[in-house]
Image (tube, rainbow, N blue to C red; front, side, top):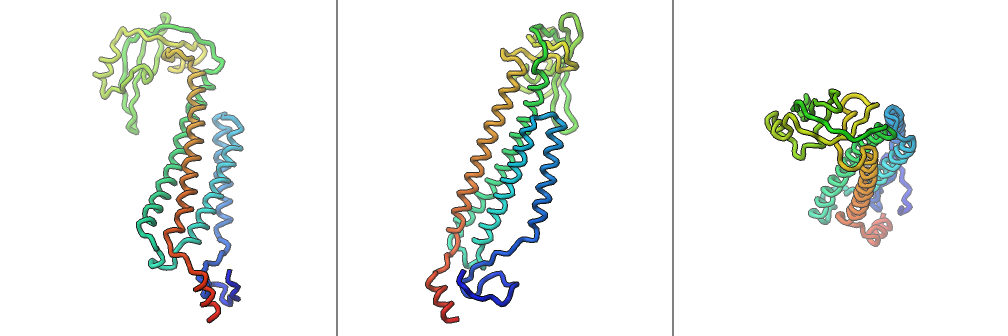
Length: 269
């Protein structure tokens, strides 16, 4: 700072050097309360779905990193914020950087959300089939069903016979292209179609029947979970690096104060 003895404690900008004063945020306590609530929700969710407990520590670290990045970004934005529109020296660069910050932040949230959902789905199915006995069999289709969900999703499944017993199975992994109606599904999977499967006799419902794809379901879902974790962490690191770069570039959009001018102004004052 320039060393001016400020008599007005409510001022936000130094009248001599135009520097912004750092004041404690009254919302800092609320930020930590929100972080604690997020951590509690993550912990309950992980324990409820019997996910690995190491993810509790991972979620805590992720929340702390998010708070640190948010505080750093706000401090940088406050330090670089111009006192007037005339302080923007490069308007085009300022628009590009602002757009890059918005897109990178959106990509960061989307990557975290989709990678976590993909990992959770594969992790749950991995441990559903892990250690369960199974054997190869054939599923003879009796009838295929096309159903639209209440939220717009499409479900395709079939009833049939496996080793002289009635069974049900999902057809998503068997049909290469999702059909648009019942007629297309009947054409793709007509009655009498024989589908090679893995049969899990100890499980219930449609989980008992899995399409044979060369790799056992437990191993396939484990690979999917590890891929979701790997690509998710890589995407998060990339988004964080982009945010770091654009925040470093952002101060270049504004007019930098001239130190000699500040000193001369302070001397005249």
